[in-house]
Image (cartoon, rainbow, N blue to C red; front, side, top):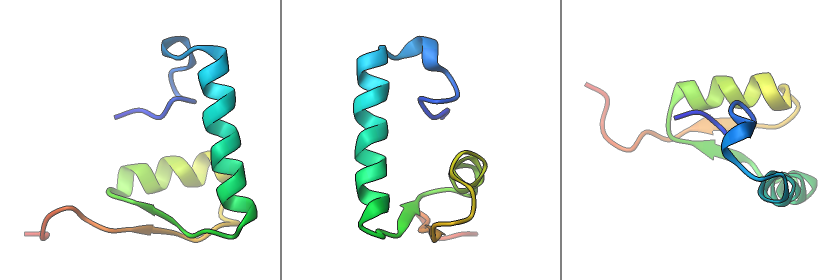
Length: 63
């Protein structure tokens, strides 16, 4: 599933600005980013850089 910044035409400008501000607020508070797939982690690293800890917590056992 693509992130909103990968498909901006699918989201209103207001929504993108609001959601980005929520992300920035969390990052200012030094919150660790947790995602559910390696794809998401890679996309976040590309967009945010490696300045923030990003962990993958899988929804089901690997196997």
